[in-house]
Image (tube, rainbow, N blue to C red; front, top):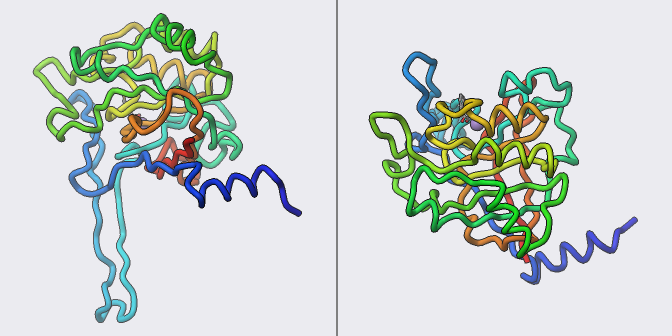
Length: 258
Ligand code: 23J
Ligand code: MN
């Protein structure tokens, strides 16, 4: 049995009418990870250790073991990552329904605002203005915040100061709007985490985590190449590793775009 839509889709992927864009950064020991206030346990860096490489340990095969925190590099935040989302029966990496791992993307370009102000906060007003140009943000779709932060060097990417990191993210009221009035699938960013660098001091703290996951919605962090997506019309595939009771995982995020 064949399906016309799927046949057409694959035809257009192979003839280039639909482009495949990899929104993922590379994983190695230098991949930036989030730093938390020093009283908390820190995320380990990504680590790769060789098992064998065509040698006594394995004459015809090369392979490695790897280790990292679940929230390393381009990664998925499951609802179960946060205390507000801990009780969802379908909120961990192994229980999320697979239909929710593919979704349409709304890409909000705030790269100019973020270049001017590293503490820039996305607001519901900005989203409503975007909707006036591109149409409503539909339920069950991704909202991706384009800041061009992925184009920065490692130092400027994390952008630490004495009073903590200074990186853009969503405001509290923006997260309230997207969870309650738009019922989105999740919120994705180019920064190291879905929340702004200074969001530890917001009320509530870490609103992207608190409100998105509290409403059984997802996060995507450390995305790249959002500048290659249209404001509307791309579809993304974001499927975390099926870690039993996992809170998230590094993943490959693939966009299909006109
Ligand atoms: C753990 C604690 C606080 C935060 C995070 C992780 C993340 O941003 C994350 O990667 O989910 S804010
Ligand atoms: Mn995370």
